[in-house]
Length: 409
Ligand SMILES: [Zn+2]
Image: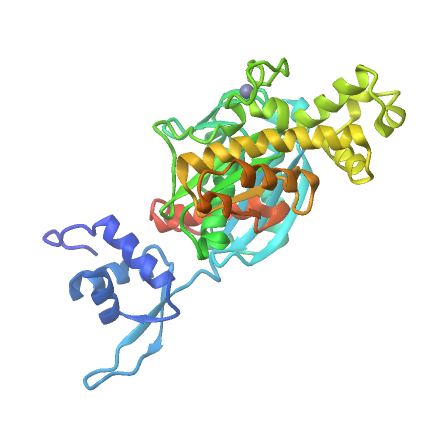
């Protein structure tokens, strides 16, 4: 019980202490005081709170001492605290249960059925959460919360999906609508920023602290990690890389209503539309014969397969998209000077023609030796990048101590 005359714990000190504990295997309170430059009583109060209140730190025996009483050691205890990660995609909803060390316990995937409407998607997501918890066998009081990745413009101040062209949603109050059906706190963010948090906490972020994640899927997004922190922008809406103007003279229409957006000419949807347009104009391609009955069912994946088989038309469609993406990335590199670019999202897979075209354009167009030699990596967690990111979204909240452990039902 906190006494009246004891000042409240400073949150930023608490986060700093927890960060130090997380970055080491074991540490004593005396070492913590030295590293965090805080007094011994302050460290004791912070550590006691992290052990008893947030329950993310535990005592692990006795260290060696140079005379005097041997110190008790503490460590981060993330292996028996769990998080549910959800990637709410337009075709599938992916879910995992993982502990705070990112070890996955259970994973499931169900179709989204976007066309059935918002309420149905929310109810399917709630069912998925319940199934994940049942299958994992983990008691509810060990689950800290749900992290969600959603495609669309997220207004972090109002905590709503302001606009999602992919889903056709406006002002969707996902958190409250889910909370009616599930007993856990819910945090969410735009899918690309969520991916970037996964890289930051569990992937590339272990080695470098400034990078840009680019998500090339049905749409396109980007997220900037600068000095170990995500960049949000004034309204939490930064990173709409898909809607920068790639070609003002293009008539390719974007889902946002404009023409010539990067997403309209280089996303999975953009690639399939470009291929369909060329076939409609009578261009020769193996795709013309294979999809004569229904050209609208051509996807970025089918175009990529045809390109890998040497089909000239498909090769040209992919290379054109890769050039647009490469130019957009050169602009990002010149603006932000990151250590590396991470590309995920399924359309630009490593070793693909799209990926190699991007790399070539970035090398050709770069200003400095640094930007010419910039590392371009595929996402560390591949297809699982967004769900791993959703796990770190909750971890981020826990580390910022905004979420308390959920009481037992
Ligand atoms: Zn657009």
